[in-house]
Length: 467
Ligand code: F0G
Image 1 (cartoon, rainbow, N blue to C red):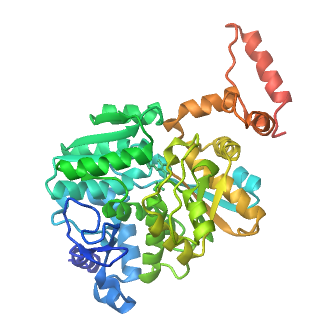
Image 2 (cartoon, protein in one colour):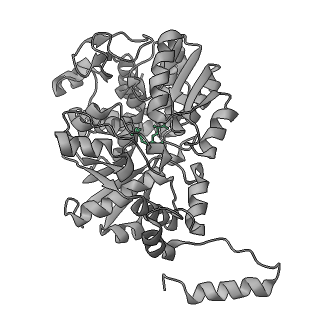
Image 3 (tube, rainbow, N blue to C red):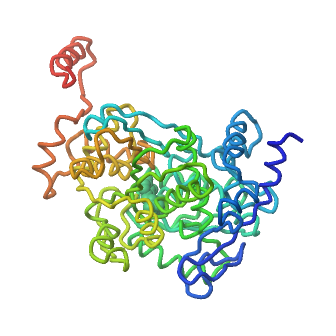
């Protein structure tokens, strides 16, 4: 056995523990409830062997060895190595048998440089880690592969989630791959057709409830208590372990030189918590020497975390009645708020909110860089612009936006934007007409004649805003 193989086999038996974030009680692995049996708060996965860097070394978690091992796996055809999540399995909770893993080759997402968005925001080095390039088109896949595998190992026949659309699409896919059944609760009329059609195609039992996301969550909590189904929302701590790999892949791509800032959209706050946890763990393990600042961006209409931080210093959750066109993050009472507050404070990040018009403009700018994303992801660029103006982000700092969902998740929003209908009849109509018009490219209906097309082409050339 080579040194690297010996390290790998030693590490794959790594021990993890579920612990309550509030009272510290230790949870039972494979239990149906994903909450603390003592106080009902959220659980998190801890790795007691890493407590100190000496402990980490004793557990075989040598930073240089890990970096080499993870890089080597990129040339392997082993299904676990092909996954951008399980490639990093030394810092994930270990399954009793790796055959339980359900993988769709998730992760492995690109990092793009965004030059014109960088100019719009006023920073020289702007990048996007595009989690919308995952198998079901959102970051949810990186967490779902881990949590669904644990559900399979524990022998669950049914898995369930409440969702604004992406979690349900992802869960339905992973459940289908493993022959498990899935139950989806979504707010009626408040998720995009793209996401709904995915859940249907992957065979989920899909219930559109006459309530919002927070209402779906409450109903699901009760269903889970009454029926033998396993909850796969991001309150499930295994989900967050998989989502950590976004940050690990990112740092590997940057040759372990941390960017100065990472911007994440905030909804139920699982993703920001996971990315923050990864940053802290990477520092603990000596994989990086400095922490990037992790900032969370919300829309003004779904700003529970912003209000929680500003009005209570992060001590008490302020729930809101959520209203935003970014349906993915239309959440008023985020479950993982305590975890998110902790990582924002520890990394020195901030929270910011953006208007609907600012979000729509940012989405068009990301599209114009040849990348595209769904509306919720675009809050990151809109938020960055504000943070640059405030002086929190400086011009020469390196910034990474986490784009969470694919452009094709919400074509309706994009079409309405370009047709100029997005804000029609709303209080933002006038502002939108002025700010967004230069970015609008409505499709044109023409006679089937080359002359008509040539005229359009000539006009477009004369009025090209980039000239
Ligand atoms: N971006 C997208 C595209 C999302 O779908 C979500 C959440 C978020 C950002 C926010 O992430 O909740 O971890 O803070 N979507 C969930 C869902 C709620 O049901 O698909 P978060």
